[in-house]
Length: 297
Image (cartoon, rainbow, N blue to C red; front, side, top):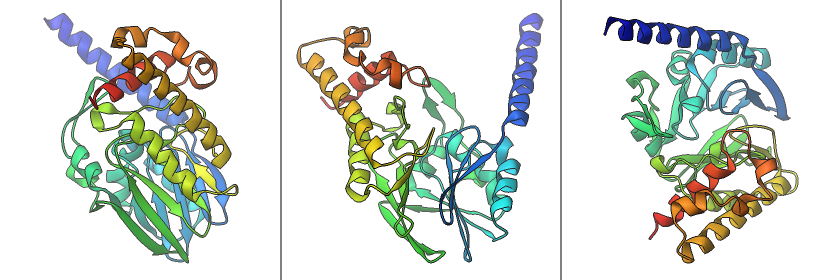
């Protein structure tokens, strides 16, 4: 029993040391997207930063240990006050810095389902996630859409239903022609659709359709993960998802089981090399789509 306890304690400290080392090595990179909009990348979801005379409007905040580095990077860009922080959804790689950012002066805003999920214990990919602290919770929530009039721009924050989760939002900078999609877009790779958090394949595709309706060929699209994108690339991404969904639906209609679809590599054959091998494998993608479609029956 004592040996088991000692091993558990040792593993805890080793894990913490590894995480601390990784955080020390993480560099926050800044990419200018428009005149006053930047995309910050480090470890976790892509951050959007909109600056102007009225202050800093920020989208997502990655993990808590990176907060100082993120603030330092913002201060390299502007000396304006830290004003608003939008959480595109509840996952920790997008909300982990909330408590720190609130202390820095940000007012945190999200869809109501983001606050609800952060307030209670959750399950992500089979692992339990404890509820966030009260200090990390969004202060203002909305149910559908809301508009910010800041830095001489109208910024539309728009909820999309049951896509990556049940609390996703797009942020559309109407004048700058920039859209931040959060994790309703994993640029160039299979997406993680969190079924346990209300996500669905149909909602994910509908979310992309919403962006394609308002985007033009000049629109800059900030995905939740990976590289800056555009409308043409998003159209190709949607075609991939629709193709996979239709193939899985055909298999379901033919009476195929979850195990059969999960192991049927032909469903994703031409997409595995390009879209797999990052976070979500082709096999996991088939499983997710099957479970999502079956849940509607």
